[in-house]
Image (tube, rainbow, N blue to C red):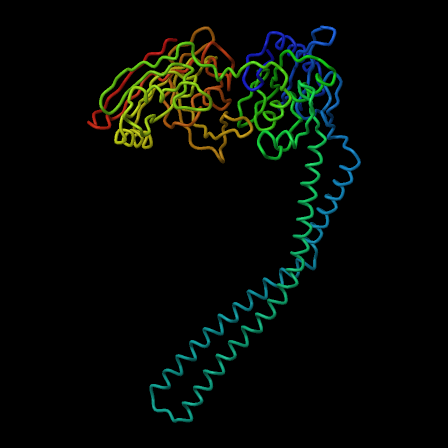
Length: 522
C-alpha cells in the first residue's frame, strides 16, 4: 500500500532513496547557504512499466531562482517562466501600482491634503476663539443689564448679541464652504486611487485564478483536474498561494506523466528550523494540510493508500475505573482511545461513561487527553460536579503530573518551558509557537532518569493547551527532544510515550482535597 502522506513511518526504500538525495545535496556546496536556511525535499519510490524500481526526487518551491534543476523533477507549471498572457497581465498590474503610487505621492494631492488639514484646524481654532469672545461679551451684557440702562441701551445690547451670533454663523458657513471645496478636490484624487485599487484587485484575482488553472494535475485513475476545481470540490474555497509547488504533488505528477507506479513516498527537512514550527534537519515530515491535502486527495485516487495510523484504535481498548462515587468517576484511558467522540466510529471514554452512567445526559468529560496519550481522566456524574470541576481547571487549582520518554538527554535536571502556542493552520492539527497570536503555555519539568540516549521526565503543566507537552518537548526553543513515538512532532514508535500519571483536585461535593495515581507502564 502507498504511503499515507499526512502521517507515516518512511518505508525502508524511501529511507534508502532519501540517503542518496542527502548525499547529492551535501555535494552541492553552492546551495548550502540557501537550503541551509530550511527547505523541504521529497522522494518517491516508483516502478517503471518494465518493472524496474527507482526513485524520483523533488524540492518545494525553487532553489537559486530556478525550479528546473537537473536530478529533480520539474515544476508542474513553471512559475518562473510564465506564458505571455501572465507576463502581459503582470506588467499591467505593475503599471497600475505605479499609477497608484504616482497619485498618492503627487505634489498636488499632498498639497491639497495639507491645505485641507490646515483649513480645518484654522477654522476650528477661529470658531473656538470667537465662541470664547461671545461668552465674554455675553457676560459683559449680563453685568450691564443688572444696572440702570435705558431702552436705547437695551436695544443696542440686543443688536450686538444678534450681530455676533450672525457673525459666528457666517464664519462657520465660510469655513464649511472652503473645507467642502477642498474635500471635493481631495475626494476626486481618492476616488481615482480607489478605482485603480479595485482594478488592481480584480486583475490580480483573475490572474491568480488563471495561474491556478495552469496547474492541471493527474491522478491514479488517469483523470485530470486543475487547482481551482480540486479545491472547490474538496473545501469549496480558493487554493492558497503556493499550492501545487510542494514536493509531493511534483513527484506524483511526474510519475503519472511517465507511467511510473508510485510505491512509497517521504518528505524530509534540510537545514534550520522555522521559528514557529518543529522541523529538524534530515527528519521526515508529513505533507502540509492547507496546500497539499486537497491536491493529494485528488492525485491519490486510484492508488491503494495505507490507512491513517492516527486513526488506529488500540487492539483492546479497555477503560479501567480507578475510583467512583455519586459525583465523579476517575478512569485510566488506554493509549489510542479518544477522550470524547470525534469523526468516525471509534470508541471514546465518553461513550464508556455514558454506558456506565445511563441516567445522566449532561457534559461528562471535564478535561481531555490526546488520543495517543494514556492515563487519568476525571468524569463528572452530574451537572453540579461538572461545573465545580470545570471551575477548578479554569482557575488552575488542579495539579497534574505526566510521565514521558524523550528522545535525547535533557539538561538541566529541572526547569520551566514557556512558549505560547496556537494552531498551525498550514498543518492541522499541529500546534506552533507564536509570540503574537499564541496563548500562554507553561510547563514545569523534572528529569527522572537518563538512559541509552533517552530521558524519562515528569511534566507538570501549568496551563492546558492542545499538544502543549508534545510541542514544549520537541521545539528548538523548548527541550529539543520529541516524545518517543510522537508521529506529529517526532518519529513513529509502537506508541506515544506520554502518560497522565497523577491528578489532585477538590472533591466537587465534599470539598476534600483528593488525589489519584496511575503509574506508567514504561
